[in-house]
Amino acid sequence: MNPSRKKIAVVLLLAVACVLPFLSNNYWLDVATLAFFYVVLAQGLNVVVGFAGLLDLGYAAFFAVGAYTTGILMTVYQWSFWLTLPVSMAFAAIVGVIIGAPTLRLRSDYLAIVTLGFGEIIRILAINLTITGSASGIYGIPRPSIGSYVLGGQTDFYYLILIIAVLVVVAVKRLGTSRIGRAWMYIREDEDAAEAMGINRINMKLLAYSIGAVIGSLAGSVFAVKMSAIAPLSFSFTQSIMILLAVVLGGLGSIPGVVLGAVLVIALPELLRSVEDWRYLIFGAALVAMMLFRPQGLWPARYEMKQGARRGETEEATEGGSSNDVKLDSEKCNA
Amino acid sequence: MDILVQTLADGLVIGAFYSLIALGYTMVFGIIKLLNFAHGDLYMLGAFVGYTLLSVLGGDSPGAGLMGILIVLLLTMVIVGVIGMGIEKVAYRPLLLAPRLSILITAIGVSLFLENGSMIVWGAQYQVYPLQLSHDGISLLGAKITYVQIGLVIISALLMLGLHLFINRSLYGKAMRAIALDQTACQLMGIHVHKVIGLTFFIGASLAAGAGTMAGAYYGTVNFMMGFIIGLKAFTAAVLGGIGSIPGAMLGGLLLGMMETAGTFMFGGSWKDVVAFSLLILILVLKPTGIMGEKVTERM
Image 1 (cartoon, rainbow over the protein chains, first blue to last red):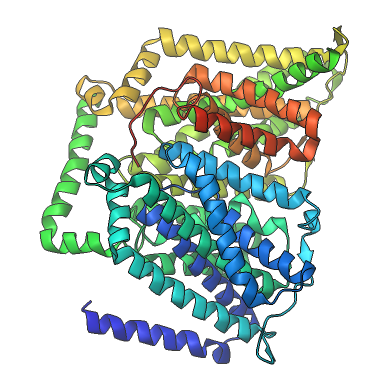
Image 2 (image 1 turned 120 degrees about the vertical axis):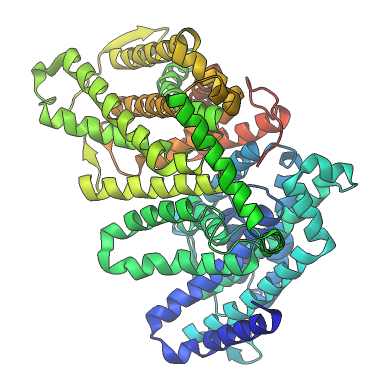
């Protein structure tokens, strides 16, 4: 697709997203809103996993940090929603540095388990502390207002999260093509070589982790006022996994892919709602099938496609060749 | 003193379960570098298959006895082991050369499939195990240790001993260790790599299933979500001991079980996971390769 066509496609999609509230019923509008929350979350995680290659299994923790910071500040201290946003984002960045600084030296699998443990700790803290309203969570979070207009309806929040999603997508895209983004990708591909080229890998990883945290907390803050009630159940390990799923399903490090992945992760189970009990079973099987046929994700990152386009079929040929080699080897082993 | 012994004893039982499941994690990771997230669900599947077998074979009758339970345990281990092999063949084998994250996602898909499949087959509510274990036991330094606890620890220890001997003495064990070092070289040496990987999944799945059946009998109830949190814990245990290391998984499981019981005792039940995970993070930061892990180069 050439750049101008791409632009047209993006504008068309945005136009559809803008008129969606007038075309759909409340149910699908709600699904779309949730999908945009996932777009924000998945793009945040995309910075961490897709760009920097840090496997984070506790990403929902930052979603929780944002939601609870906003929830507590608004209900206990009567802050305005817009004031809580920078505070919760700054807080998430600090939490990100605190957890990241000692752990980002670890190998990826250990990093996975540490982030997983951290996510569980945040969730259990939310269940057990009084300030977070223990298991029942925080309710009665007031509606935000712009001037005298109170954002109350479903459509208001749809547009709010849509705007945030667009901003986050643009920000992440620009980050990805920036000097910092290239540094992250070097680290992801070969940490030692990146360090040899003068990239401070710990600082860059920490930056990726914190930026991911900030984006996650932003989604959390909006989530808190949208639902007007939050409970620990929303920030479970399953939530982290679903966000990771959106990223990998779409294609690691690929901006449009991750948007697509986020929408699919929300939309597919909803489309399967008519089969009730079976839907997550089918979803699981579909996931396996999708990975078997497209292990790179549905829409792989562009820089890889560029290379592929330049090298054309040679790359495919070598890939196929290597798997054939293994097959041959195993056949030899059989014999 | 009695509290200390009681904590140790209770922790030992939970730790034995963790160890058995962690072994599967560690073996699979050691051999194909996959974090098999569906592994905890094999534990759950083991608990349910054991439940069904006991119901069908009349395990609730008083005459079933020790022998019957052991037979059910073995049958469950074989059945779930075969299922584990099947999962490897269908879902993981085609992706062995793919990026590591996509095979991780497949594992999550398998996990969703197993959990929801079990929910459809056995229902979403808790099922009561058709088995009453006696609460008789002995007193040791003021702590009460039941015969069941002793039995479970002994069975677990025997299973682990068997695995240890298998890995270190048998030809297949040798092949497994070799594949963990260099898969391509093994193929060149004429080792049937896929067969050995399949065997690894069989052993891992059957150990998890054994733990599942025993846990079902020990706690009395089973539920389709029970594998999830235990899977996390076993993963933690495997990493704690140094993932890829078999004695590490055993040690990590036992340590985690005891840390948790100690945490429950000191801070109350709702905080035990915080204690477990915090200690884990602390240990990993101080010794990033786990207790018995070897230094491995970063790869993703």
